[in-house]
Every structure is written in C-alpha cells, then in structure tokens.
Amino acid sequence: MVSLLTALVVGFAVAQIATFATTVYLHRGLSHRSLTMKPWLAWCCRALLWITTGIRAREWVAVHRKHHAFTDAEGDPHSPRLLGWVTVQFGNVGLYRKVATDPEQVRRYARDLPPDRWDRVLFDHSFLGLSIGIGIVVATFGPWIGLLAAGVHTVMYLQLNAAVNAITHTFGTTPYDNRATNLQWLALLTSGEGLHNNHHAAPTSAKLSLAKGEFDPAWPAIAMASRFGWLTIRHTDVKLKHPVAA
Image (cartoon, rainbow, N blue to C red; front, side, top):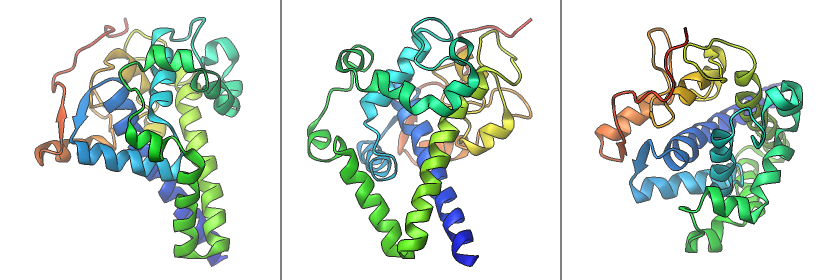
C-alpha cells in the first residue's frame, strides 16, 4: 500500500513538473513568444521535457500554432466542436501526431525553430530521453515504484494536456468573445492552462489569469524568474485579441 501511494505521488509530481515546463517553455515561451528565457534556462527546460515527455519542441509548437490558426474550424488539429470532446480527450495523442509527424506542417508552423546541434545530438532522440528519465526514477525508488510512477506520469500528463484541448473548448466560462473556456479547477492541475479563454483572448500574455479571483499557478514562478533576470516578459499589460463577451 505504501509503495502504491509512493508511486502515485511520484508520478503526479513528475507530471506536474512536465506540465509546468510545457506551459512556460513550449507554450508561453516558444509558441507565443510571451517570454524569452536566458539560454541556460531554455536548455534546462529542453532537457527536462526530453527526459519526462520525449517531446520535440518544434513539433509541439507547430501543432499549437496550427490550433490557433484554425481554432475550432476546419484545419484545427484537435477541435472538440468538430470531433466531440470525448474523441479529443482520449484520442489527443493520435490527433497530435497527425501534424507533429508531418515535416511540411512542422516547417510551416515552426519555421523559426529549425533543428540545432542539440536536437541532432540529444533532443530529437525521444526514446533515449524517456529511457534516461525512467532510469532515474527506477534508480531512485526501485523498479516497482519507478515503473508504476512512470505509468502514472504518462497517463496523467497526456490526459491533462488533452483536457486543455477538449474540456476547455467545451465546458466552462467565456469572459472573452472566443470559443475557448475557463475552468479554474483545471488551471490548478495544468499550471494555468485551464484559463484557456483568457489565453485565446490574449495569446501573447505571459500571465493567464486576467481577472480578480483567477489564479495562474505558473505566474509566480515566471514573475520571480523575471526579477532574477532569468527571463524577459514580452509585455506586462494585457494585449486583448478578443473583447470581453457581451
């Protein structure tokens, strides 16, 4: 029982770390350029995502930018309004891969992120990164807890990311006039990503909480890193793309 609880806690913690790096580095940093990290910090985020998810940054960015280009319209890689939220929630990996494994679409939507020498040597080798990450957990907690924790992390990370695409385009509040929604409870589990209506209203904002009573869990860390000079925030005022809903 203790081993199972430990595996659940470790898996949850790793999933939260990976989710935090995804929203700050891949989403806010690379996809929308709402913040710019110092090279050493960006490298650390790349390495962390490599060993926890195996994601190639340019592929993730391409998929997300295409989503913004065709939000809930024909061409959106993962629209629940077109496909149904259940299909997106449980089939998000396959939908993601349709764009991520298409070199032409990756070049089109992530032309500013060509592979560099670190990608060629390390970060494009997803299975190597995942093997290292799983190996670290297994070496730290033992094979039983380590492998179970890796499974918990995988399921939780994929489902939380899918929920942002599926649930926050279906259920929740819409303070701004766009097709995404806000769900504060999901934002607490996804480092702020559940405030998705806010994000579509102000995609270049590094802060996803825009109104009183909203909380973006990643923002305090971003603000602190900015004060330390580790990253630069693009703008501190909110640049609305969409108005407040009537």
